[in-house]
Length: 102
Image (cartoon, rainbow, N blue to C red):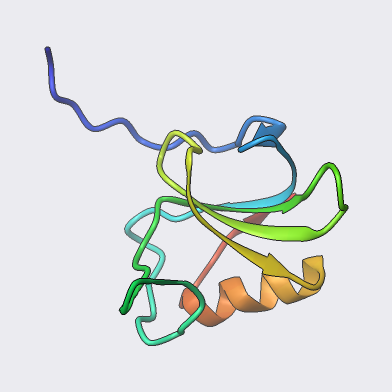
């Protein structure tokens, strides 16, 4: 088995974790990360840097979700958000410079 690092895709699939992608961001090393944002916690640890973020619409309830994804767009954590605008605000809050895709 070969161990290699794959760069994340510039665009996500239309659906991530069974949810429709509305907006997304690919976070390469040029995008700064702000620890201490307190958006997602796993146990007593703040969830750290991820390769990709996706703002999605939940298919059954139409709730907005912020998905924290790896470089292959697999969800590693999720936060329920009140709106797309709140999701964008939270992304900017946790990242120092962020390119959002539409």
